[in-house]
Length: 125
Length: 125
DNA sequence: TTACCTGCAAAACCTTTGCAAGTAC
DNA sequence: GTACTTGCAAAGGTTTTGCAGGTAA
Image 1: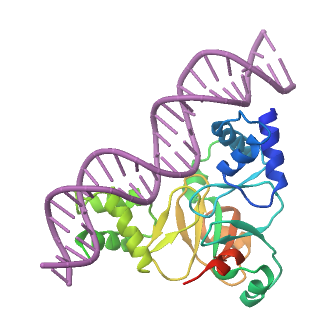
Image 2: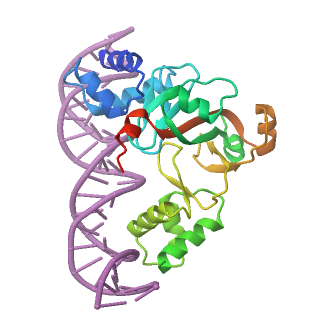
Image 3: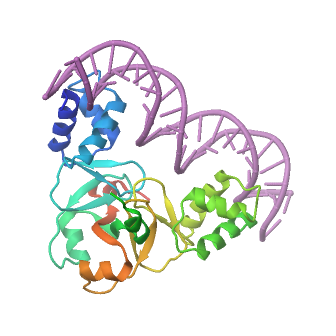
């Protein structure tokens, strides 16, 4: 656990904004001006492998990272791309959601993930 | 509607595999050997704008495209990245799902999309 | 000490774009 | 004929990687 890795983890835990790698790089530079973008990417990978952070596999373009490990749902703006936390409640309806969070909801993505039959079979270790 | 655009649309409608732009490029090259990757990207953009295909905004890395416009849920392999259609039914449970589709399900992503309060306010036209 | 990590820079990769020639309508 | 489209190649942006020096344990 190097200073770089600790700073990245702390900064990520400080915010609720699901920043991109470059945004995390800018945040970390305030504490470690010599840190490089490559180091940020490598540490985000390591921290994600260790389960200390989560890499958000949604939203198409750039990867975003989340220091909040509790199970929660995200909501993304189709205009600016920002990702916010979404307050889940049982049996919500779309009008309720719109009132709750201020977003104008246009749709949603539901995607399960796991291993397909082929990869499950090929799994040797 | 050029030959290139028609071939891309036809190929995309032929498969259930949610191919990437490069995979669509390889498929189209079988019919039009001189087609370029740039043309594929441009036509995927146009077709998506016209609502003739759907661009999948999930799965992190590369964009994937879908010729099936009916509302349906996707499932992605966390090992090889392939995206399959997912048979939605009311009130499914995880064990049922595992039996149904052959996948070993590890989790899911639920993401709403829309306009955040700031962008909604800034929307002028 | 030793394995891992860093900063830097270059490379890799996907996607977009400028341009001159070509095509659909 | 005109506006749009193409192939090609170059550029753009994000992410990964090779390397020599540095650091944590």
